[in-house]
Image (tube, rainbow, N blue to C red; front, side, top):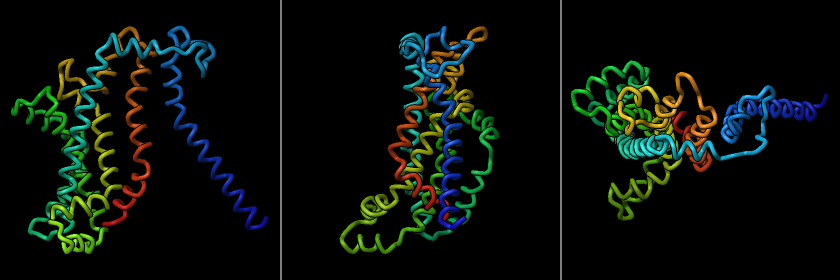
Length: 279
């Protein structure tokens, strides 16, 4: 076998494996969408059907009009967007300061950020719950946003700090010589150059707060403050599970994340890899 034919067979094997893995990964999502478009009598049949005989959006309409799903959706959007904006603002300037300036306590701050990533979220539930009780922050958007920012800001700061370390300071010095103020140089030079890493941090923050369940269940107790993960879990009854409506809710929850991945995919690979390899 020649080296050329060997290379061709290696590529065929690689693409075959990648195709098989892709099919396995997307199978649950395709089945979820298919189930959400079926009538209730088609969901459980002796022979499972991939394509509904008569596709219907009745599950989506019933979900949106007869359940608190719009409230859950609104709450998740508020919490996720606020968490993302706060995380990006604080992480960007915090990471820039740690990357560009040398001051007393800088090493301690970096070590504390690293240590904060080593604790499982479950261990922090009780301390945060007690603190929020004493501050009278329970069952509010503020409690969820603060809780999610405590996880997202350290990760975003470490990632952006690594990215800023890779940017040459000469670009900012050139902007200062052209008349930019220090803050103007950050907004006009540093942030545009760090756009891939900032997009990756923003997407991470949004997904973390969009899909988080344990804190949302612990820190909220009224129907009007529930977010999507908790609200969907409450749709599972003790005697009956409305699978069509449940799959419709799961599809609507997944769509925003899919659209964000598609829109920011050109930034994500470079942003995550640059932040990962530069120390």
